[in-house]
Length: 169
Picture 1 (cartoon, rainbow, N blue to C red):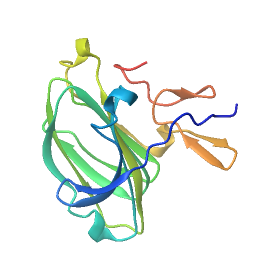
Picture 2: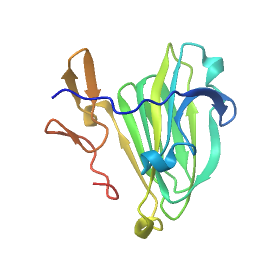
Picture 3: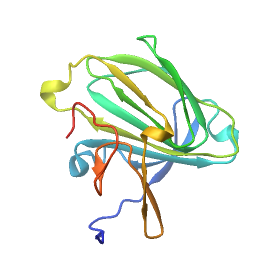
């Protein structure tokens, strides 16, 4: 199946959290056009100074955040007592729902490469209980495609299923 590009977005270099360098591809300026995608950040660095300050404890509500880490390591914890780490090929799927505090702290590595997506939850589900799902690389199957591969971190692609979230089909 050949994909057809229907629109392109140019990301903007910025800093977020406590000073993490990243490229913000989708943001409040694109939210209407890409609903339910509220935000998409990408990061790629071989210099720990670009990301080591991390994202200290901060709140979320009414959204789901999905972090996929192609390379590197990020430790995380939340106000519910969940703790874990994302490493090469793994993902973290957090349902903020009625509200949660969490932090993500990238660890020094040869390369930090990944993305984070914020999904707007449907109005009727915004007050759902918060939930956390740590997905190791073996729970994020990879499908080869011409010129690369697609990691399935949610939903399904070419019959291969990834994590099946509760709030988005």
